[in-house]
Image 1 (cartoon, rainbow, N blue to C red):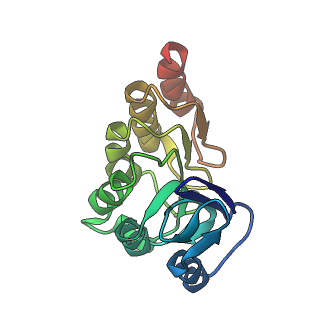
Image 2 (cartoon, rainbow, N blue to C red):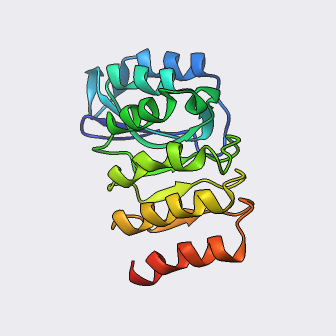
Amino acid sequence: IRSQKQLITLSLKGRYVPHLMINEILEQPFTDTHLGQGRYSVELDLSAQAISLSYLRSLNKQQVQLTAVKIFDPYIHENEGPKELIDSLSLHKKHLRSVSLSMNHISGFDAPRILEGFKDLTWIEKLIISRNALKDPGSQAVAEIIASNPSLTFLEIDNTDLSDNGLKAIAIPLKRH
C-alpha cells in the first residue's frame, strides 16, 4: 500500500485475496501521518484477482480507481454479458489501463461478440486474452481492437488456437500501430 495525498495505491498483483477481504480493506478509514484520517480514493490493481462483472460494478460505488483487472465470469457469454462487460469497464475508464480475460473459455464463435466492445475502450494499454479458443473468427475481432486503439501497447494472445491466416489478419493492423 502506497499513499500520496488523497490517493491510496493498493496492489494485489501476484496474490489472490478473497473479495470479502478486499471489501474489508476498502471499507477501512486509512490513517496516515501525512493524510490524517478519513476516506480516500483507492487505486486498485486486481490483476491477480479473478473477479465477476457484478463485483467490478460494485467497486465503482466505492471510492476506487481501478487500474488493472482480471475478469473471470461465465456470464460474459450470455446475451447481455458482452455489453455488461464493456459498460462495467467503462465505469473505470479514467484509471483502468490493464484488462485480462485470460482463461474465460471464449470460443471462436463468441469472440467477435465479446471482443467487439473493446474497440471503444481506447484507453486500455494492456489486453490479455490468452488461453481462449479464439481461432480465426476471433482474430478479426483482435485485429479491429488493435486498429481502433492507439493506447494499446501490450497484447497477449498465446494459446488462442489461431491459424497462420488468423495471425496474418492480426499482423496487418500491428504494422500500422
